[in-house]
Image 1 (tube, rainbow over the protein chains, first blue to last red):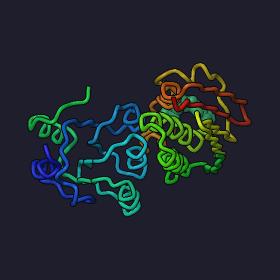
Image 2: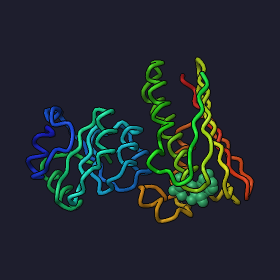
Image 3: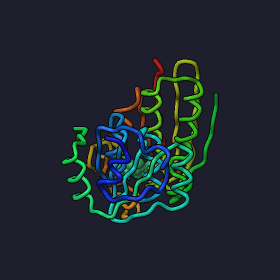
Length: 113
Length: 137
Ligand SMILES: Nc1ncnc2c1ncn2[C@@H]1O[C@H](COP(=O)(O)OP(=O)(O)O)[C@@H](O)[C@H]1O
Ligand SMILES: [Mg+2]
């Protein structure tokens, strides 16, 4: 599925990386626990409710390119700047973590484990 | 190549700066990306610990042709029982640390899983030193 399709299905907005929405992704991981994210084999997409600089740093260390923030959380300028240095895509959606995961699962996104 | 960084107590905004810079250096040196990831994940967890559980400290990195050596030395309360602290799930993290997405007691186990050599020494009331080595091959 492309990031564009994900954005459409979630009625989401793009906080950064609108030029990269043709990227194809297959797997998602959802967590608010960054230590958990740091144990992953490479995954492109993280769904999280944790919206702070550590979210972006963790993605840098764990080679994650795309973050979907749930529940209307919006990245700060600091976060966007850091994410931009790492060529990331930031997507913001209003839905809860559960609903976001449900929609993407139903649409065919695969779990990592 | 020798690099040093300072980490400051409670400075969560900058947690990961050293790891990020090490990542750039290793990429420039064409180190295998999977090895780079192991290095920076371990170093990042150690950095977070020095900021979260201690009063800050130093990150010292030495890179040579076949390996990287990292030392994270802090001034802090120290770890009374290192074996207990190494257990997955053990954590004394404050709420602020949990708010940052850490504090699940996975940091030291994450370090152990990612490096080739880990040595933790600590003196209660003085500080903790975490030494890690990763081979490039
Ligand atoms: N640098 C340190 N100084 C003092 N205590 C530490 C340090 N690093 C780890 N600890 C202790 O070991 C515990 C486990 O650490 P860790 O596995 O990284 O999990 P977490 O940071 O999520 O609590 C911490 O909660 C703390 O009690
Ligand atoms: Mg920790």
